[in-house]
Length: 160
Length: 160
Image (cartoon, rainbow over all chains, first blue to last red; front, side, top):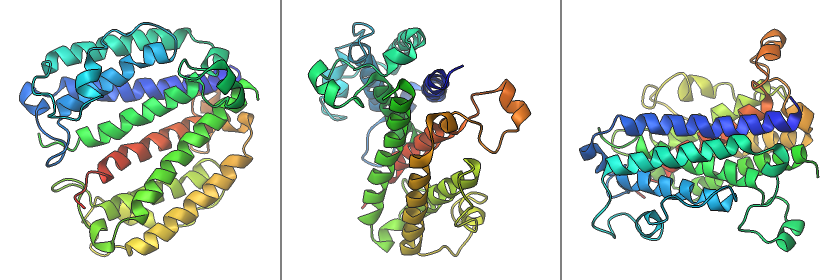
């Protein structure tokens, strides 16, 4: 493998490992446990599950690899903080969305070449990208993996 | 820049951004605040500061780029859980170590070529690396960046 292929492999495996750990944590929680805040007064696990699902779903158009599956999640889980919207989808429904979104992303990730990974993402214009080549798909992948790890650190703190 | 150079840039910038955010959080905390647990009964911030410093310090020999600066931290912050060892270094001392270790790492990171990033780290033999080329420096960098994000998600939860 070339250096660039080894780097893509490392980055998508890091993503996949983090998704796998998260999925395992989510699969072991009851509906009641999803309603626990990660620390007193902080986000509930169900909110973070919805938040991560919405952020990952938004990666499909951001990376230019597909249409969103669940844009309706943004109002509850991105535009508003936890508890601002009283009625949330059931944790089981969100878990189904979580798996569905990550499955589609993974298929798209495996299809991208190294050159496509370092090409621009859709939130930057061609003109700006010429000046700022760091605004590429690979950078989005690393940032979103970190974002997921950040919230998983919180989720594992919630009382069981 | 070549694809591999763009990927190295993305990965070391992701590391640097995460270190920068952590350093800012640490610099704004008082000695008393460092003694707060991130959630009831969980690790105190001072423990996580020492833990992250020890893990980053160990990256110097793991990546084959230098000797450890503070191996004495492992006993308190890696081999034992929080509160097992009664007497910890002062938070100010640990913050000095934190900055020192990350400064040295950053200098070494900037010196490594793309080929050196995908070469084996020192915890894998040449023989095993031939079979598992994923056990390279780049993989360590991504893993440690995620590890830091995971604990930073926890640290920002502590009551101020």
